[in-house]
Amino acid sequence: MLTPSAHQDVNRARIVSGWVQTGERWALWWNGREIAAVAPDGRPGVRLWMKGQKMWQTKDVRAASIRQGKRFAERWCAARLYPELRLRDAVARLVNATPPSQAPPPLPPLERQQVRRLANAGGRDIARIKEALDARRHPQVH
Image 1: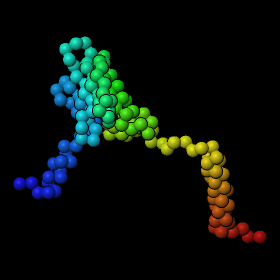
Image 2: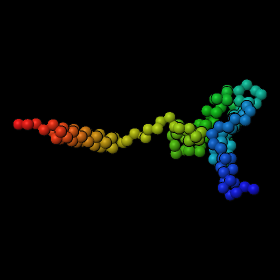
Image 3: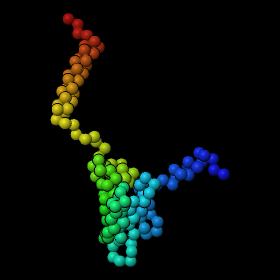
């Protein structure tokens, strides 16, 4: 018999995200459900099936290769599941990858000026502190 905590672990293990391969078929999972599949169908290329969040957001197309089909599916699904994110970040979140750009978005021009001024002021302060410390360490005899 499963204890409540063991039952929760089993349920968590079933929630898959990202690409899962079964034989020649690749499935893209998100939030515990399959949202895309890429599989050969006996014709040149592969068949690509995708599903967005809404029932009417489905697409059934062909791709030249599994790699091309997976890439197309990632972009198509990411654009529908994370419309508020940049496409690159949405795809990274969808496939549980680290986004290529970890840098925060650039600051507006006014904030950049403030940051530059603070950095310059801080640099001057540090130089003044170093001079004072050096003067204490090496007192000049007159």
